[in-house]
Length: 155
Image 1 (cartoon, one colour):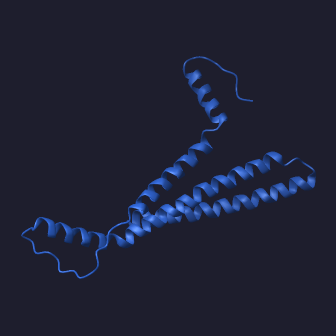
Image 2: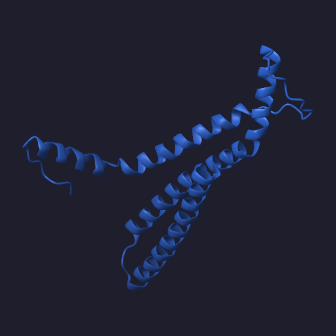
């Protein structure tokens, strides 16, 4: 889990945050130059706000998912030992039960539900960004062209 899930997710999040930060720095520089030239920056500021909201709605749930996965990774051995002890005591197998004096360690249901909720929120945020009015119109034009109908482009 550490090698194939946690490390890639953390590396991708770090690289994404670095690229996002450098993009914001560039957008602020462009905005400053445009304001000095007297050009309107309304659309650029709207785009910057949209990117900022999207990045927060994407980054925070991704961080929460990573923390839940770290929780799972650190407690997994204790959960397995507890499960083995519970199964051994309930079913009385011929294999001797482990003599483990450690306290019982059970997973927290809430952590798993938060992980799945945050995973869905990341997906919903991504779909909200992608499925704008322009995107829906572009798909409509694409499918109409497949059927041989031509529709005016989005202006």
